[in-house]
Length: 387
Image 1 (cartoon, helix red, strand yellow):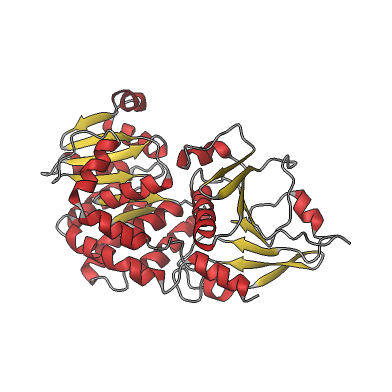
Image 2 (cartoon, helix red, strand yellow):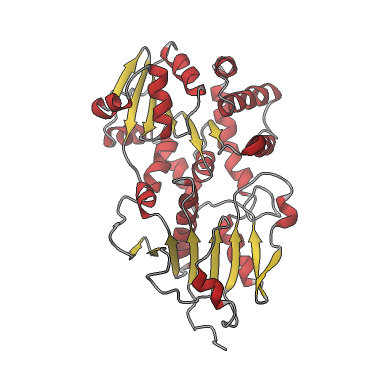
């Protein structure tokens, strides 16, 4: 019978399902474990092309490379880079681990601590499942780790000092203008409303463009290349390639800008600099909360509208300390966006027009409430330390 090697590193395996969500979360976690806990972390990823959108420095031709203290390994099948057992093995979001690892359960003892990192949820049932163990094969068990908003859950990814850094950034008004100028986004005045749009396709974007185009105040919509851009082009009756060519297009009081590729640290600053953020997936959803700005969450659609239950669960927590009238308006806006209801979106947007400052104030309070004493990496390390 083989024995476990002396290596103490952590392996994190991730398959890219939603372009940036899964890899976004695992990349954040890997960096935090390496930089704040001085752990040797190896991140295995099956799709370097998608990964490169949030880590532009990634070399697509390198099977093994290191960035920000994390070893990144191209995960192919069969593995071209041999897996060396370490202390901890994390399968992110129930990805199917390589057969080399499954086969090793028959001979390797003791086996690394096996963690199944689940998707973030605000639903209360995860409190009863977080930390539970389940047999996998040959007597080996894995433990389920559920990120969430309660004290009993796995918590939320938030780097040490992040909220203080964001606050310092937002206190200096010049940071916003300098950042937009650095991205080549021209014509944004201090008093203009700036909105980031990183969503899936939805007809609600037509309503958004309508509202911004006829508003008394100039607005700027910052849109990366991708699915949201398709809906923006449809709403403005333009060809997406026109925006790619001109980089920005004026439509009434609205200016649409094509957003250049950014890494995660740059994207954080973008969210900090905008007045409103529209985000999708898990990683951007959480970063929008840490940005302390009003936001709309376009949640990944699921069969039988299961995603709307998850949206409702989050909104109930988020609005727990929010005024009833504002709660009604913000919930209506999010439901309308997720249900592609243009009429309902327009109505909710107009209702919120005079209330953005109140919602902004709530968004500043929320992060300290949501972090709930400890972040995800801290809870994960403590769970493994306690056995």
